[in-house]
Image 1 (cartoon, one colour):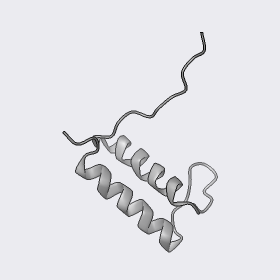
Image 2 (cartoon, helix red, strand yellow; image 1 turned 90 degrees about the vertical axis):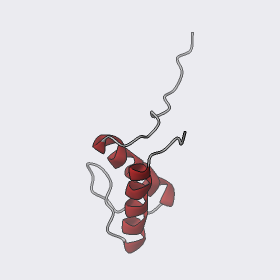
Image 3 (tube, one colour; image 1 turned 180 degrees about the vertical axis):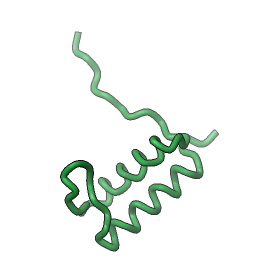
Length: 64
């Protein structure tokens, strides 16, 4: 079974295209996104909100 759903891939593709065009904006600040990694992260985040199959975000482990 695939890790990411088809919709997730489409959202990432849209975000990267927007980033290349220079129209993709980030979160609250609304600044232009310059890196491709950030564009992919935004695409995955949007896909997650829409309910696409995307693995959970990795979080830092607690030190015991």
